[in-house]
Length: 305
Image (cartoon, rainbow, N blue to C red; front, top):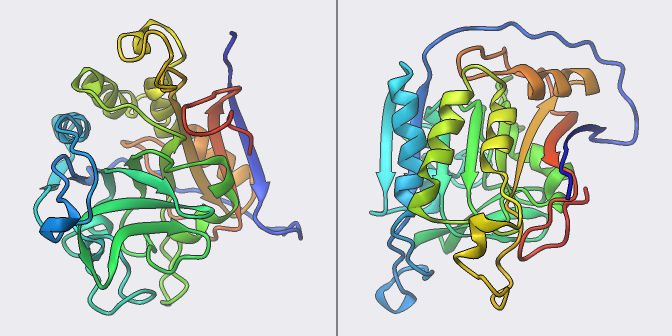
């Protein structure tokens, strides 16, 4: 099957706004962080449950280490331990004791999160290791006030997690990228994830390392999508050679950016790099996304926004 990459932009509301757009590029070293769970804690032991995936932290670290080798500052490596929603939630919109800013995810300029994911109803749910404030999952997107990334520092968020960028999330995912609870004008630039199930194996470490490497010469979005796309071929045949498990399908990476207009969102998606970052979007009124046409993962139908 022939595969093609496609780009699209949509207004976030029915009225088309006449907004100007401009970006100011910067070439600075970024603060980077990684958050990964490989050893999930059973509910009987006070945890949130979930199947262990010992190779998952290594996938995230491959990206993290390569970013460090490219001159960025490795600001935090968080693996297992007391991984709760407190590290990801916003203190102004969710709970005053949230610590997404310092020293956690919104303290970074670029961050990767590796954990089990699920569709929480038009938004991403990411399983945690232990409950906090009654919650066992971080939720990002429409209808949730838990996540507001980018109002501090985060520009690029990578979600190594199943169902982290499903097609039904796209209109509302921009909510997680702007904090309307503060007077801050800061916003996240891009969130990247997967439509449907994604794959976990140490053999994919190179894909994450190459995402970090290539994102310095091509756009971060292009690097994410091209390095993580896998079609139904020999790459997954070793895992489910006869298709009995229903998992030997495509892996469908999705890159997602916001902007103040169609042109702004698309320009950011197509051009922003780790070493050539833009000023924050002046609004999240529009969004743009990059994907492989016809990509059909396990757990979901073909990507069809």
